[in-house]
Image (cartoon, rainbow, N blue to C red; front, side):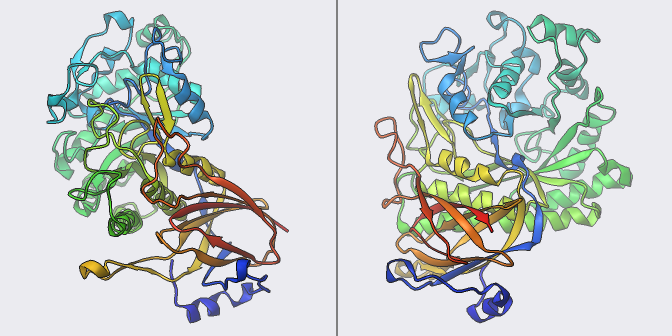
Length: 539
C-alpha cells in the first residue's frame, strides 16, 4: 500500500493531470491513484455481515426484549434495532454463536415460549458472570430461538447463517435442524412442526456453520479429528433443492497448522471432498490486554491497536496460500466470521453484559480499515461477520432497557455500504508513514493512508482511513484513464480520539457531509484520525 515517491511517480505517470490549487494554500503530501483497469473482484455484500451470540447483553436486552415489554418492539424484537439495521443493508447474520453454539440444542428454542426449557448458559462459568445476579445471561430461557431468529432476519432483510453444534450433538441433529428450516411444507414431520409454530413455508437457510472454534471451546479437536467430524456431519446432508453453503471451523488467527492439517486430512479421502465446502472460517481479534479498557488509552496505544488490526491482511494472504496447497483451484472461500476489537473490562453498560465495551473513534478506525482489507481481498473473502452486533465487543449498537444508541462503528458500516456489489479496484497509495513510540524507545511506524475503491458503472466509491492522530493528509486523488465529474464526501472524525456515543450524549460522534468540485484530479485533506467516503461520478 505504500511506495517510494520516485517508484510511485514512475508507475502512475500516465494518470498525472493538472492539480488544482491546494485548499487553503496546502501542498499535497500524499497521492492516491485508482486503477479501473486492474479489477480485483466483486465486493460481496456478505463482507458486511453481523454476528449475534447468546452472550451477555447481545440477545436478551439487546435483540430480544419480549412482546410484553414496555420497550418498543416488533413481536418481541427491539424496534430501534430493526430500524437501525434497515439503514445498513445488512446482508447476513450469524447465530446462535460463537461458543454458545456448541452447547445449544436447537429443539430447546422452538414451540410455545412458555413451555421451552431453561438451561445453563455456556458463559455462566466465566468469572465475571459469577459476580452478577441470576438472569437470562446466566440461565438461558430460550425465548429467542430458531423461529424468532428467522423473523429477525426477515425484518432487517438479511440472510440467516446458522452455526451447528458439533461438540455436544450428532450429525442427525444437524440433519433435523436443516429439515425444520428447509423441508417443504407438509412433506416432513419437522415441516409440520414448523407450521405448527406459525411458519408453514420453509425458511430456505443456505449458510450452515459446521461447528465453531473446534480447536477450542467447540470440541478441543486436532485438525485431523475435526476433519473426521466435519465429514460425518456433512455427508449426505439433506439439501431440499438448495445449494447449501457449508462453512467449516477454521483457524484461530495465525494457526496455519490448523488450516494445513484440516485441508490435508479432508482431501486425503479424495479431491471431491472439497466440493461441498464453501467457506473456511477464520477468527481474529485485535485486543488490548493489559492496556486498559476501551475508552482509556494513550496515543501510542491508539497506533498499536491499528497496527494489530492491520494484521488481518497478511493473515488472509497466508491462509489463502496454505488452502491453495490442497485446493489448487481455490474453490473454498475464506469466511472471517468473528473479527473486531477486544478490550479489557470496565465500560460495560450493565453488569451482566459479558465482554461489553463502549466503542470509540479508535474502534471505528479498526472497523473501517478491516472492511477496506476485505474489499481489497474480495477475490479471497466470501463473507465476514463483525463481533458482535449489540452490547458486545466491536458492536454497532448499545442498548439497555429503554435506552438505545448507535456507536461510531454503526456509521462506518453505514458509510461503507456504498461499496456493496461494486467491482473492487487496485489502489496505489503514497503517503508519509506515521512514526510513534519515540517516548518508549520502540520507534515504530504505521502506514499513512489506506483504503479501498469500487466501481459500479460510472459511480466510483473510495473509502480512506487516516490513522494519524494529529495531522491531516493533503492528498491528490486521480483515476487512471478517467476524470472525476462530481464528488460527494462523508467524513467520520472527532478532535478527541477517545470520543464515543453514550445514552447521555448520543450524537457526540456523527459523520459530516461535504461536496467538492474536482478539476481533472481531486485534491482533498483527510482529517486526523478519520474515516472518509468519497462517492464520485466519472465523466
